[in-house]
Length: 392
Ligand code: ATP
Ligand code: MG
Image (cartoon, rainbow, N blue to C red):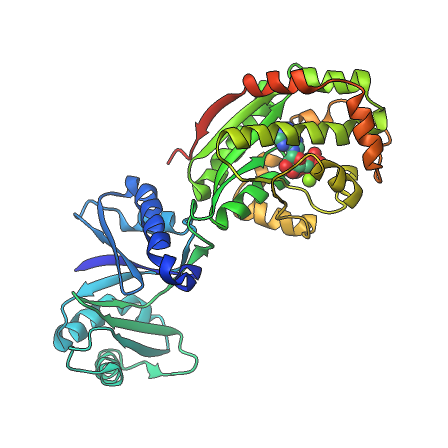
């Protein structure tokens, strides 16, 4: 028996004329993600993507697990591919859905006839196949409203497909279909979740991380790279930029007012992130900020940081509570890494009483009391770039 995977796209179906572009991008992402599961023929027709194993070596169980992390898929099924002959469909279906039906009391059959040349229409096909299943499994009852198992049969151009279970996909849009963004990533709980959520909306991820050796350690950097690797299981490869920030932080400490340290540091982080973004054709920034979570995430502080940015700053967590963020962090398996107790450059030289309502002009004046530009240029010039992707 030949099994295949049938993929239904979610929002892509709404894309009208651009639909083919989105679907092709999704196919490219699927191809890349299933490389280690074996060889597959992947193509699209009639608003479905077909993933057919090229040989018996292809590992469908593994492919199913990987597909669950591909954005742009709303539902998918592992299906039997069979001949478009009602007697063969009946015989094969009875065998293929045996385990699902033996464990259930109620079922229904849903038929879709996309190939109008097939001699039975959808209601007839439903009745025929339903009858055959009832005969084979007499313990069952039909329940059209609330069945425990729905056996779906789709008659399409080249074959008929049968499945009993639809698997929920990761949703969202194919990574890359919305362009590129630069995530400011720390070792905390929030920014990896923000990165995941924006990849889900179709952004290809670039991530910048600021380190301040010797105040921050190699292990702290490793932790952030590990987090990126976890996120990359969903987002695909992440372009990672590591920026050395020590001199800038020391200059802030030596020249700026203590209560403004954090806000000025965040403005300089943003300036550097924007320069790197522009050099790499990236059009938006992403941060893990959530309104009011800490002193640097009040409206006043956000106004003061956004003031240096001439590109959109996406803050997907802005309206979420910490509990909500932690739930997502657990789901994507970043939480346990995030709570490892390594230092972040943000916690170096933190003011005792940070300003929660900073006056923008005072912040600008204070920052201008020292010429940061050469240090910013130097930090950008010395950036270290690498690609991070999941191992398996
Ligand atoms: P997170 O939980 O993501 O670490 P946080 O709660 O520690 O965030 P802040 O320290 O105020 O919050 O940082 C706010 C945002 O600034 C982070 O979500 C992240 O986008 C960015 N950020 C913080 N530290 C760094 C860093 N070392 N490198 C790059 N970006 C950073
Ligand atoms: Mg936070």
